Length: 293
Image 1 (cartoon, rainbow, N blue to C red):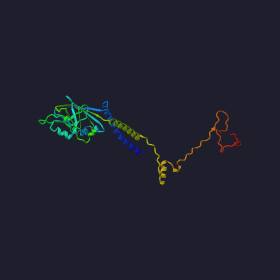
Image 2 (cartoon, one colour; image 1 turned 135 degrees about the vertical axis):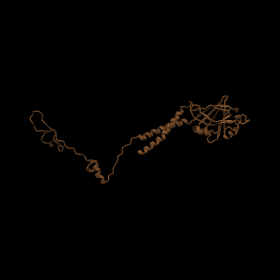
Image 3 (cartoon, one colour; image 1 turned 90 degrees about the horizontal axis):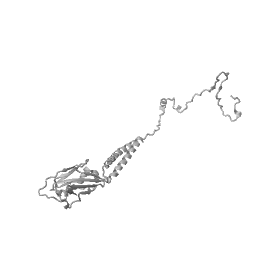
Image 4 (cartoon, rainbow, N blue to C red; image 1 turned 120 degrees about the vertical axis):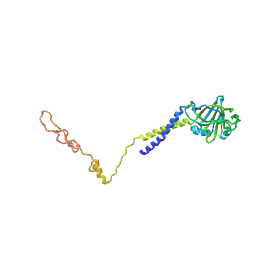
């Protein structure tokens, strides 16, 4: 039973400590949330001489840089502005965007690093514009799955398994972009997961400590001795034979106390302080002995 309790306690510790640490980490992150429960982030200012900034595969970028945004029904809101006003944001199939911007200079987002402060964006610079290429207005295109001016909302879980590109540019398609980008993530699953991890972690750790530190009850041990080993066991116990075990040792009887005369009075024969106990309890006064002594 002790072995089973030890194994169960160790398993509870192995599961409870990671759950408790994960819950504590989520609780630390939750302290940086906005009052409405959402998480906001600001990106570094993006500057390019091209006409657009493109995320080739949005789902692939989120899987690599922010996998937590793809869990559940989290909502992602992107906002973009230029010095002239709101920018255009559009979501379209990757093949359509590649064909549309094939001859248009544009920057491609390679990575968005998670860090303190403004999030850095690493771009692949735009190439030189093809001769005779005119500015292209994005609003005139009909392949957009979702589009918006100034802001765009999407559910990352709906993009799983789909190759969709995000395009950010001026509404009129002019070059020389300076983009101020922001992102806001609202995850409804976050508070529930945080409290579930904290509660389960604490319970498992407490139960593991109880199982591992619970005192062990003393057990009675019964030895079975072969007959030929009886003399050896008797010698170890200090008895001549096992038949002497359990026999009470008789105490020596004390002598009867005597009254001794003190002072100058004439010596008198000594008398017992307590008379002898009769062998049989008298049933009547006639059975008492005649001698008063």
